[in-house]
Length: 142
Image 1: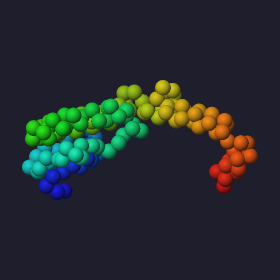
Image 2: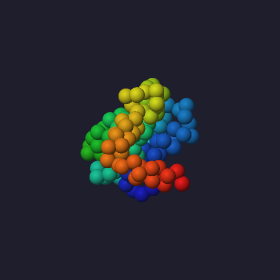
Image 3: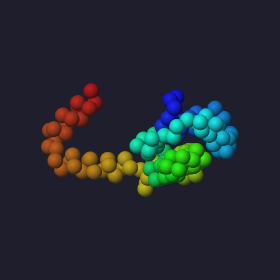
Image 4: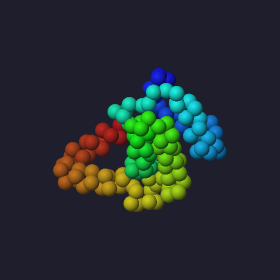
């Protein structure tokens, strides 16, 4: 890693720590992150992002720690940076356990594919002649 890690680097490292010790506490992850990254330069605020987890957690949850990370970078406080990473990590890990996955078909209000599928079918039925629809279906099945 370089002298200036990105927020993504720190978040991915938190995920690695959890993968190697899934029963460890978040405090353990915090202290390991602080010891590994604390002596380095602070991340650039232009790259204040973590990998997307829309398929697991609503965006407002998986990004919930980023304002705390930003405050930590601005104040040059590794405690806040790491705390913000842990907030997002907790959301990514706990949301599916507490409320089921977003793409769970039993949760109609979370099933984004259903509303999109209905709109696509409606538009195709309305605008695509039967002959073209048959041709498209045959092409798709090959």
